[in-house]
Length: 241
Ligand code: FPP
Image (cartoon, rainbow, N blue to C red):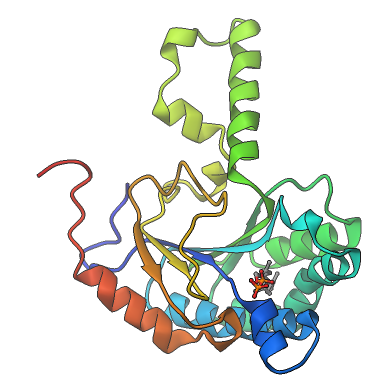
């Protein structure tokens, strides 16, 4: 784990943005309105997180399990990165935020992939917070892929099986791209649900959890601040006394 300087600010905050559908249903609207509004919450939280000195903000925007949703909802969710970056890249630039993505790109439509890649290219020189979208991401599949790569390297004689250690596994996870902040310090989930949902299982090994009853579209910088101040009072012992 890497501490965030002298302050007790978490270096890596990860968020499960839950409750868009319920938010929309509560207003008698279609689920997509919840996702649309959820995008505004992403903007608010990103700005506040970058102002608070967080190094990496990872957002669970689409899971490998989300393909089970109705096709029109999947289609809408696939369009969201295009809309988001179209509107917000200038603001991300202003805040010195760098965009990154983890997830299985293969199944993502090429127009969405292109929009994400363009945002990554446009912000590549920014050295402030990393806004890391987990898009078509699933942790078990990530670990399977890492295991396959390591087995392949062992079969090719590049490494010995006995050499495989935690560091080597981390180098084969998707979060290798956010080194040295792979470990999550603070995991936040909205909407009152309290589970991990196949999100960063390895990386959350020692994270602190914060659950909010607010539905994601109602989430804002002040709730993030509440979570951060709660984190400040936690004692992290990493198995020691
Ligand atoms: C979970 O709520 C939310 C998602 C699966 C999508 C997350 C997407 C956003 C927050 C929009 C921003 C995305 C980008 C890429 C900028 P849910 O639909 O499961 O809600 P429910 O549990 O109330 O049904």
